[in-house]
Amino acid sequence: MRRAFFDRPVLEVARDLVGCTVRHDDTAGVIVETEAYHDSEPACHAFVGLTPRTATLFESPGRAYVYRSYGVHAMLNAVVEPEGVGAAVLIRALEPLDGLDAMRARRGLDRLEDLCSGPGRLTQALGIGLDLNGTDLLTGPIRLEPRTASWRVLATAPRVGITKAVELPWRFTAEDSRFVSRPRPVGARANAA
Image 1 (cartoon, rainbow, N blue to C red):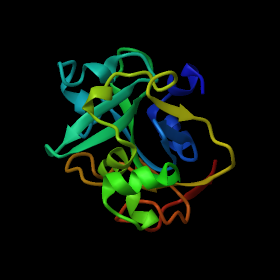
Image 2 (cartoon, rainbow, N blue to C red):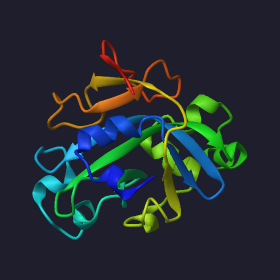
Image 3 (tube, helix red, strand yellow):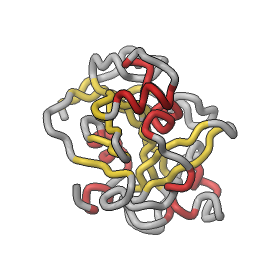
Image 4 (cartoon, rainbow, N blue to C red):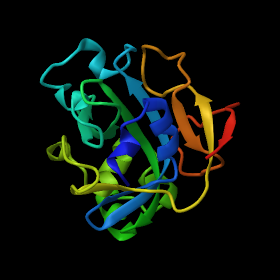
């Protein structure tokens, strides 16, 4: 991947990340679900402006924004758009690809569909923690790799687990993927990607 991939509008990047691969250490998975967040809407951490917590969101595109949700789960995001704009794409679910034994050990589960079907699950399965916040997604310990095939993307589902700007259809999922997190999108529009 090139940095220019991330230096684009958040909705484009969120859609185009479906089908790309996330790698960390000996584990990897294909992205099957994402959500877009932008500083113009109140569900985005950057909506409050530049703070110590949100600083990574305003850095150059192609960085990892890793934060803790509800004091429990690490969440992996890709920082996008030009430096100074607070925007990121949350990686919500993966189809496990490599390092299945390590993923199963970290998650304490055997069923393949349960390993990475949620943002907290996938970071646990891949061993991604808060110490990786701000690292480079092109050269760092977490790497994003381009698609190897064409994907059909459902592009009009609402985001999950938020209370603000819930009406925005900024959730993108791979069509018919059994690895998508719950609730599965219903009645979403498909787009070839």
